[in-house]
Length: 188
Length: 253
Ligand SMILES: [Fe+3]
Image 1 (spheres, rainbow over the protein chains, first blue to last red):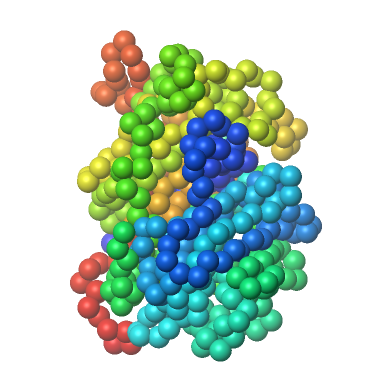
Image 2 (cartoon, rainbow over the protein chains, first blue to last red):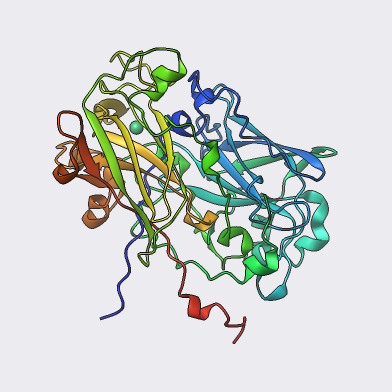
């Protein structure tokens, strides 16, 4: 008989009203009005990351809630100030983070990863949150040896993790839940 | 705040893999919204790096003293002296990992409908009335032993469009961070004895009856507050780290 462990509590969808508990002012609650959870205040080059989550029909997921975790400018993690949360705008599905450009983060065995943002996606109809990464279009050289990108066997799918540059310091990242450009999601 | 040098976090033990067959699958057509929101490609399995083995750290100082009291926190925030209407309950339990270790000082956020089944949310138009003294938003942090509690009113069941009018059993949504982004979890808590649980298409996205049972809070009469509140017990388990005696094992050995 193998060793038994407790089983993880199973996931359920965050539902359409996830904002009440996670972004109360977004839900329209007159509490915590001063919280701006989609802004990271940390030393480094300020950047804007905006985007949208699209469903299998190409329609925006207007009730999505996203969380961001990333390295600081020096390529370190575990900094309590570097975490953020954004709600899609109910009318359009657009979301936005104001953060800083991450440094290159170490991988296992002394290898390095290309700079990236980790994003989790929660929404109605998503039974367990989706985990993806956003890389920067100007880091092609570092991406050539990135351990996560290199694990993607279908080379054309690697592009789904690279943001589009709108202008200096401003990026757009479209997350597609299905379709021929389906974003790569991780099980880590 | 001090950051952990990534050389130190790279050496943190790995988390055991998530049992994806125990969690609900992304595509579960009985819950229609999953049909267009479920990825069709397989998830990409990858080892964990420092960005997965660490996570945001929240300080208890961010919490207001009424954050874990949904019976009074909304009224207090809006300048009312009232209390929420409904069956007064306390929910308590422990957050541990799969190895049974307590998960201390982790943020637990909760949200729910009022006693009539109505959410205080821009998008909820259910005909049940709003309660002027109930917001449905709370949060707390586990103590050093992983224990938590919050006070609220029991939420009402509510209808939602799926197969015509389906009904959600009474439930409280919850979100927990753990000590690393790999442990992040959002789920829902149900109440023992609710006949709507087996009828719910969202509950039934979970295939294993034993897994569903893990989302059902148990009536805890031993902890009842006489002449005040009923108490429910609900324990939460997050992914476990592999044993520490592997910590010094070098890559590739
Ligand atoms: Fe709900």
